[in-house]
Image 1: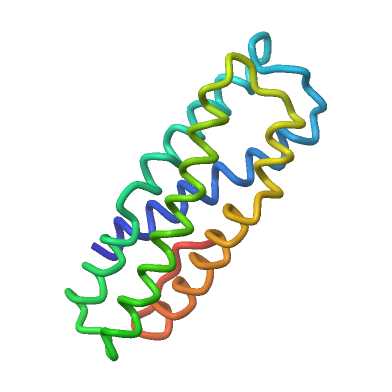
Image 2: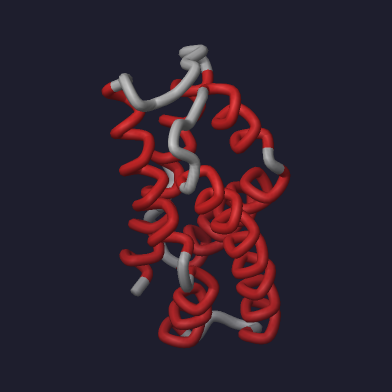
Length: 137
């Protein structure tokens, strides 16, 4: 289960890194851009990775017997809320017929997405303390 969590974190991070580069391009929209298709694919994959990530974190905690479980479960609820807020923003962006660099720049700046990324970096560091390995590059 931990490997699935790490994969999801990597997928979310990959989308965020691509969005940083996309925002810097100054594109009016994604329709004629090859990177626009890649953007939509990465955002879609990130959306899938966000779905149920709190439950997955709880399952990792339970499977590995991490203690104290109540604190991990409380933190999983934080991850879950931030993931749901980020997913709402990602899905809204994906609903646009054309995605400009400015829209992606604003998504990148979203406190919801930034909070989620920080949540994931923190849990990655905490999990590394229990068993070697890291989801984040």
